[in-house]
Amino acid sequence: NALIGTPVDCQPCPCPDRTSCAQIAVTGQVVCTNCPAGQTGMRCQMCEDGYYGDPLGQSGAVQPCVRCDCNDNVDLNALGICDHISGRCLKCLRHTEGDHCQRCQRGFYGDALNQTAVQKCKPCSCNPGGASGHVNECHPQTGNCQCLGQVTGRDCSYCEVGFFNLQPGVGCERCKCNPVGSSS
Amino acid sequence: PRPDVHPLPPGTHLLFAQSGRIEHVPMEGYEMKKDAAKALLHLPEKVIIGVAYDCVEKMVYWTEITSPSISKANIQGGEPIVVIRSDLDSPEGIAIDHLGRTMFWTDSVKDHIEVASLDGSQRRVIINSDLVNPRAIVTDPPNGNLYWTDWNRDAPKIETSHMDGSNRRVLVKDDLSLPNGLTYDSQSSMLCWADAGTHKLECTHPGHGDRRKVIEGLQYPFGITSFGKNIYYTDWRRDAVVAVDRQVGTESDTFQPQKRTKIYGITTAYAQCPSGQNYCAVN
Image 1 (cartoon, rainbow over the protein chains, first blue to last red):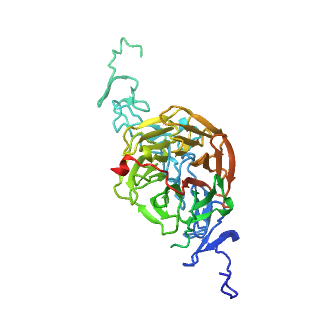
Image 2 (tube, each protein chain N blue to C red; image 1 turned 90 degrees about the vertical axis):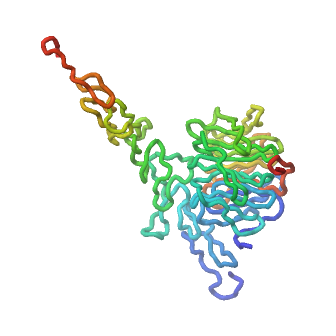
């Protein structure tokens, strides 16, 4: 307040990069009004929506505001896609999950980081007749389901060589071919 | 009165949300008085998305996603009041029925539309199916209609229903991409939307099935509001409020605040309520 008449009436704004501020007359509270790009908050201590970091180092080391890193598994038209301090992704898409949407959700397999959408997370879809476990449980990368005895294939949909007649909940039967008359 | 709330002089204003504050631009006719633009409200720790105006009590309402809530404040000066703070995940669009004294909002995580009295009581979910990314919502109080957008990448749409959620219908689904903004002008009965995917601003008379392109080549529209012959939209790329003449289909003015950050919701704070009453207001 320059109207009081003492040498310290005007003080520098407590804002980064000498940006402007405004003082609320009654409370004396000072609000930065023109924070650097990507920053916001009373003292520009926060990151804007779509960015994360700790630009003033309020809870540890200084971390400039950077864009949310969600491995292209969020929609840029969405709001609040990551936590503005930790950067934890909050709106993972395409069946991905994790702090950076970096892995497939349970029940899905594939490569969450792959650039092409079809290579990303696909449903396990284990064959209910051939899988010994749950139809939505498979290896997160390979997609291999847990199969019943002598059942094979990624999704447990067919019998091993020498076996036939896949029966739900039982597995496959040995062929029992007559060794004399068979060609294999 | 709270000193960081600059009371608004009489007249019509545009209110919009930008990075922890609600700004206002006074209108002189259809001209934005840019020099007189300033912050109505500083909410420095918040990310404000939707704004709506109640012309009866002269209150601005807003949604906020950092600590998900819906709040209000008198535009003539007054403390912000939180009206809803529980059971919200990502409240985005908000709309007021000034006749029925209710508010409606979309939640893009819960994927539903809710209604409540303006004090936050009598809260109820009215639409909770077939929504993927609900965003903008507007009311047509005299006719008791509700309109909203869903920018679902696989099947974007603009829908309508009565204010209790009944009589739900899809109004527009073809040639849509990211309908972020929606506005209803009760004088002309026109519903207009801004699409950040098709980069167009289009209008329709709901129920007539007509559809007219107002302007194309928009960069990244987010919020939109109508005022008389004009439409005003906020743009994420230009960090600006752009005025478009609805009839002529040209950009007539641009307001770029000094602060260069994303601008979200926008609404018109009319000097007076439009005349009219609806069923809910008398019953």
